[in-house]
Amino acid sequence: MSMTPNSTSQNQSNEHEVDFSKSELALSLTFSLLAAMKYEDGDQQSAETYIVHADEAASTVFQFLSNPKLYVRLTDKVLWELIVEAERVKQRLEVIRRNGTNRTVV
View (spheres, rainbow, N blue to C red):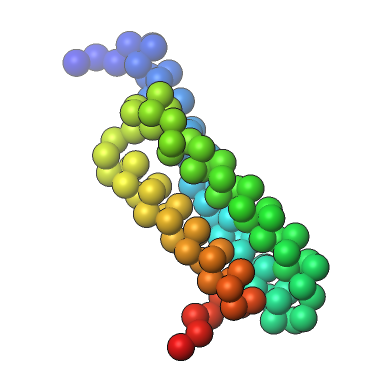
């Protein structure tokens, strides 16, 4: 099966969407780490600002993952990886909001 210009373009578009989503998740994780550090330093205002940014980045990915017209073009493996990573980000943010740190309280 040969690749047509349209299928090649579509594959590249799908790759860009996946790369963008992964970048947004990485950005959200970075912001969550900064929030935890700010909480530990006692700078609650900065921590809360970083949490807002982390939420915004994660929300972008959740919007993408909730739109069948967008995610239907992804392979099951890629879709699963994005969902697992997005859930990890969500859980990390919940822990930080609850504890003011990245560490779980035992």
